[in-house]
Image 1 (cartoon, rainbow, N blue to C red):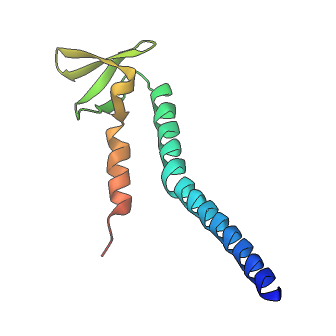
Image 2: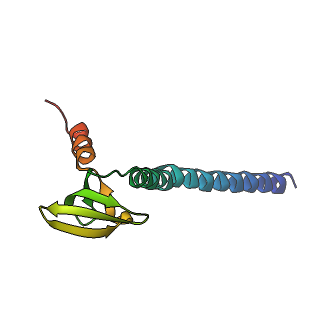
Length: 110
């Protein structure tokens, strides 16, 4: 009888260990996958909301240009003298100087 009780209690601790392990996996997934993506999306939205006329920007397609005008959900970008293109606001990826600064901070110094 004592043997049966000992086996039953060992199975219960194994179940708790499994739940703990699954919980740890969910936490790791959240902190290494979901949270950084949410932060990046929040930063991009903030950047798009702070767009100003005359800023140099890069589109998600890699087109570099200067903002001429900004509407609610579209922007006009001057690519070269006299060449103006209309884009959706969500197509603006970043400011070229922020990309240069980000690359410079990740490069090792010798």
